Length: 455
Ligand code: UD1
Ligand code: MG
View 1 (cartoon, rainbow, N blue to C red):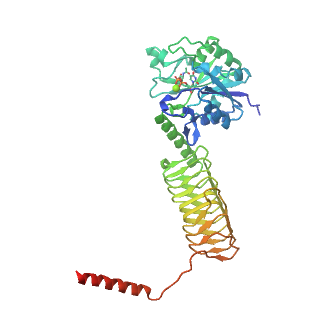
View 2: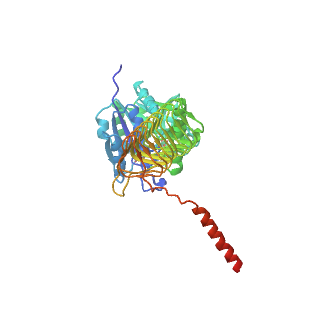
View 3: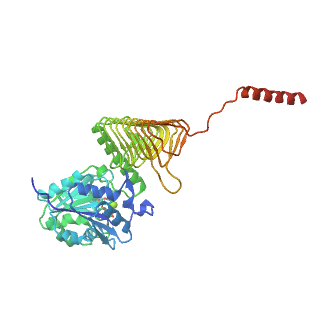
């Protein structure tokens, strides 16, 4: 096997993003539960970038913090003045000078570029190009840089504002991302000037600089949907829609059934096994894994949870972080589970809250059971043994342990541990008065008749 070529990814994130109308930096807005910059970082890492430099503006240190949280070895470079994409890339000069075979430049606000696309740009460098750029056929090319080809060769990229009417007629546009051969990257970037309509240092001029030196520049094409950037909330929603479209497709081709795919929303990291069935209107927050053969019924919401093989959730199930359903466990309608293990084959079928708990295999939790896990200050645990049976409408006041095989009578408030195989009943004893209802009715009827007669 060939040794991996060292690769640096420069992720440009010094953008202002004022069109988001947000206090939050644009690239920290999320698609499918992950920040825009998180998507860009994941993609370049999967494409083999072993070094990462993130260029941020000095006003937005939180962007650097997010990058370091996701990629602890990332170098954070600050672009003090916004003077163009090449100027931004050069903020990472020290990282470029460290020497890598490949340098890729990605935009933090362009979250849908697949790792395969970055890999293809790198492969073009291996094939001898000094610069490889990503192009797309724009439905509306206004605003984009145009790829100027001559005799099938890329000669230059001309920014919309600098383009002649003839060049503006070109629909093949620059997606913005590119790969530069590490050997030439620094000298090419340093040769770029700001002699243009915007007085900016354009990364795109890397093409003309390389061609002037007799180096080769190539274009790879991507669908427009892959290179769409995010500048406002409508584009954020468009990026979300595209991400969901791809993820639904991947889940279905992976062997799961989605009855109405357009109504199911995944997170960037949702893992769905084979022969899983997901009914309409289900939402997955981050951190969910669903194993083979499980069924997620309609209108369920899951986050930070695992669903074992053959288990079922919902309809109207809610799994919060730390919910772990073992194989064939059942969590039914209007049931909320948080930080709890539901053992193999255990059933929690109706109208129940299970939090900070462990439920043994085959236990049956009756309708309306509540684990009272919080006293306003601390959370406490409830442990329910294998095969235990909790009668409906019981309140289990944690910390408390119900032994294996024990019964809890319906409507109990259980405040003390219950021994294995015991019966616990914690409710007022039932009393009965013979004939009470009949005499009550007769007395009430007599009063009503007397009142009517007096009128
Ligand atoms: C850029 C490309 C254009 C391409 C388009 C695709 C250049 C000169 N032009 O134009 O050819 O068609 O993207 O969307 O590269 N940034 C900084 N510092 C700066 C300037 C930009 O960090 O000084 C970052 C931005 O945060 C953003 C990216 O670079 O992530 C692109 O900048 P932007 O201003 O959006 O470039 P465009 O004019 O859209
Ligand atoms: Mg832009």
